[in-house]
Image 1 (spheres, rainbow over the protein chains, first blue to last red):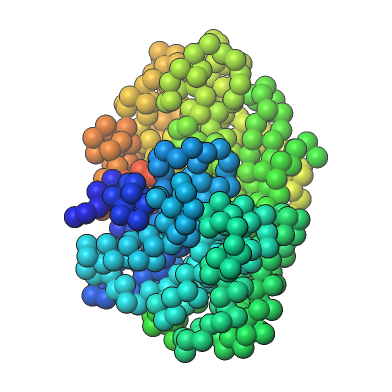
Image 2: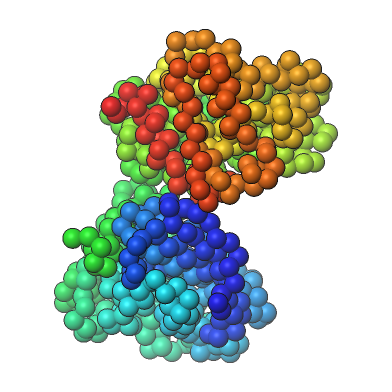
Length: 288
Length: 288
């Protein structure tokens, strides 16, 4: 096995694997958690969960409650990390919203980040291929994606940049138009340079305007109304994404649910994870 | 309000309150989390969850998923802390399994612990009375108790020492016979002295032998088979408690479920919290 099994934990009648492996994309060791439900299905569908700023694979694994519904519906879950760690690049640990814990799910093109900060290739290409070779019961041809905040951005971006790869996508409080918010500007400038055309290649609001593939599932987004990153800092801006989807004629539409009184935390995520699990279970062919 | 509200968080359509207050039992500030479900019931039943060694109120709040089922069934949850903090007693921070984070839910009788380490009175008397004055919708006359490890001990002990106070009791991997395990011996010696008769007043295995009250609900216990504290260190010993209950003729019986492959972590707790929530919901009159 190319993965080291750091822990194998029983949960909800399934198995949670805490793994690490050497990534060719990031040229660092990477941690990843995989939950396999107690399914007799020889082709278990997979949901990828991309975490937000500062998170490791463990945060969502411990606090999202996704595994409960993974067992209920019969899909596996992959929880990747949010950046390379220990790349030893000057400045990578200087701020909480850039560098370590903040890979932003792009392939960096600037020096010195381009050597290691290639989370786009890692998450959408290298990791699923590597896992598919080892977890033969998992069907990486039947895969969906979700995520939170920076990971919600990563999920939307990855779905729209890889037409047909993911059956469905959803997001919790996603950074929906990173080209026009402080988090996106900071990370895109550092990882991708100053040319905004290069930013738009990852920006969901720009990507959906040009999305033409026949696979146009409904996009489910939850946003807490009391999330300071939403109503105060305007880092998230899901309404701009909804408008872009409408103007582009995206057939599935965006189901944006602003949840009154909810914040940006895992208490918000766990409160609506059932809706997202059900959403994906439908597109993964597990329920009607 | 005698409680300071440090946070009010929306979760599962209910409200999670992170509170602190000055305790007369411990003579320190104490943290406590309270989850109130979205119930129109003017008398919401209450489940107390006692945490294990090292935990604060936040661990179970973040990782047990009890609140999901609290909303489903309609009971409130109280998550107390596991000890006084900052009592400034020499030695209280020297080990992870004694002192801070390890109050053991007893009233200490030895010097210097007896001044502050009075978690028994705090949890079973002071805290519910204080909360009842502020949370008028909660019905502290209709209350049950559960807990994990040290908290499982605390739940069983508190139930058996207060006949009729709690409608039902359950436990995850409880320290079932603390008088005969290393954790119990260490804590009881320090908090209660060397006379074992004083230990037995808190030991569930001794208490159930003398339990006579008419309220004898079924006692639900889950234990993971791969829990090192169980099969290697023999700190938990639920079988001894089951035997004592049988010999005493305890009418409700003990339903001990040894879960194959599960460990001592919150992954174990979250896997079986649904069974415990349902168990208590029944005794609290919320379901048939």
